[in-house]
Length: 300
Length: 129
Picture: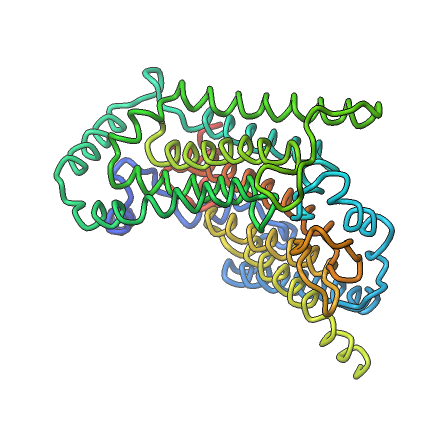
């Protein structure tokens, strides 16, 4: 009888905490029996409270030892900010002094990440592409895995959206949206002249899209369908890959590239850097928006 | 010991990065909530970026963006651009890993209706039997 009351009380507490009524309830005894414990050999020797305490103390001590070892290592590192450290070597000299002459961008970092180490950044774009694909595989809801609960949730969302109770959000977004998009495009197109570039510009554009979707959901979904998303993502990645192949082929064989470096400091200069920045920016913006859409709704 | 303190206060960027790493690591170990574990992983990520970029800094020099491209570029004017470029890769990979683990967490929550790692493991074991 007492056990029954306890069980009911536990269910009530779970319900107060927001759990569904069909949520399986885990008893503390079960928890204790099944706990994956690094200190399992102590099982039964200590009470549960002490067992947790030992685990916490062990974790803190381990973390402190780890941090202390790393701090001792810092003592043997070169001085912070000192000229003539081992990092300041001929690699840096080449990148800084020949960068404008060989590639043409006044932002020396975009010379490095998009041309000198272009394949590195290409691999990074592929990682982002793969992450977006994995998120899509895990979270996508189509007719095969949509439950009645999901449908009810979606209907509720649509109802809330149609209630026109987003007046403040909408008027603020109307004012902010042009500025955000303009700033994103500026950062994208000036990646070779000023701080910024494909990844930061794409993140700004993606954030703007997410904000826009929150205020005017229908309008974004009309042009950002799944086909458009796949087309932009794959086309940007292909463009990047083929441009990189061309640059490396002509560079390695000493051929004359038809894409000149232009006058450094002008907007149409630095050869392939600006188109690549635009391609990367489009891909990053699409991926950011897709992350948001899949996490919130399970579809684009 | 006073020698060590002098070195640490000189290398304060690295010291702060390592303390941040410790904070992320301990929250990865002690929290049971999966979202908090992922936040701890992100803090560890950030500490690594801070640690790497601090090696590119050189006192009294400016960011590697050439203001006057007509004049010859002197290496002594600019900081090392290489660590900054490498950290960009790390940031994008960190974002990808975070998104992937959050997606897995969402799937786990849909199945077990809890974010507590202990409870998830118990429920999974109960299902096996």
